[in-house]
Amino acid sequence: MTDLDALRDLIRADSATRGQPISRLGYFCAPFRPAEGPFADRVIKVYRGLRDPAALDRLAAAHDDYAAALRDAGVPLPETEFLLLDIDGARVPVILQEALPQDSMMRPLMQSRPLPETLTMMEAAGDVIATFWTAADRFDTRIGFHPSIRNFAIVDGKAVFFDTFPPLIHYSRAEMGKMLLQFSDKALMRWVGPLMQGRVTGIQDEWYSPPETLVGLVGSACRLRPEGVQGYLDWGRDFAERRMPRWRAEALAGLAEPPRLPGYWTGFRKLLGLQGEPNL
Image (cartoon, rainbow, N blue to C red):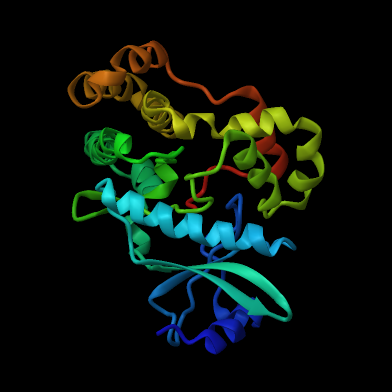
């Protein structure tokens, strides 16, 4: 049973008490892991609240459905709990997640390990992508997946996915586009974003496309390790043939050259200071 009072006190505490954020560059929040106490084995993610109680209840239900769907589809996911925590009169979305070893984060491993090892990591992440999309037909609802390098850890040679927010299930494309603004941790994004709602909404499209999730993974690897571009492209093309034949043609078209981020998203990232650090 989660000690909600202790969790409230921890969230209210200043960073010196609760522990420094693990990453300050996340789009939705700056997750932190306490150095000690009852939550020392958890990463805590605190999100912006909403004034609409029904929207918060829907969010909680969607998150539970999404975590269950990921597991049902064979995606390795740490123990994850979603709470709507009453803090100072407001209901605040909070995720408690089993902490993964800090040295298991895929992004820094991709940056630091020899290129042949990084291809092994890509295979592990690709296996999760193919497994998810092969199973996704069983869900009679709109469902997506955001398997970027920054959202994986490599544990005992296997890729573990840990990004469950926003829950990419049930929401329409327009609704998800609004969520990208509502829950952004960046005030500038909430202020500027509505002026470019169409482009903000388009950010999600890759997450709902099986071939584009694979292409996005390869593109991230190419940007992280430019000296390995040809190896990553060769791997991606081979993987599409072997593991994602249903989407082979679209994936191969996207891998004809090193994939690039859309210009508008590159601009948003620079504006907000987001450089793709681990989301945790």
